Length: 180
Image 1 (cartoon, helix red, strand yellow):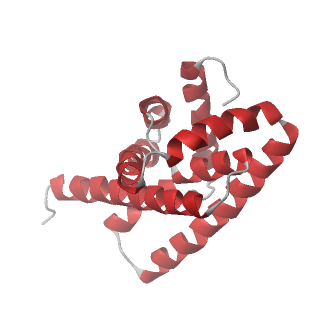
Image 2 (image 1 turned 45 degrees about the horizontal axis):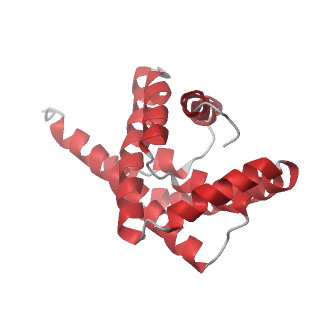
């Protein structure tokens, strides 16, 4: 939001996921697709705790940015106002598209030990206008726009991120040859 060139900004956004992956940190949108690979109650509980941690972390960081970088806050207000006009279904669909790209990015990183998936998938979701639940939590906090309408929007995006990531993970699993 503080970068004048949207293409540079989209690539710079990759730094967050690269850092998360290299440092072994937790990001809901990077983990949820793996539930489709192996479902168990422990993983489900961990995801619930993880999304709460991501919510509090993104919200706190957004509030701090609102305080120290008012220009970013002003930009966030414009962006978040437009996001709220999308409606529940559109936000969910845009969230699903992001979920697909997030899962693919992390899967390539984990399986191929390569950051290329991150460096390509993240700019695609940013430039396409897809919705990322954790990033949106930050944006709305930076805008100071926490409300019931915001919570409904975030729920739609979380559901979308979840459906997209789990659907692509499941489809990828189905496409693998059966092991004998």
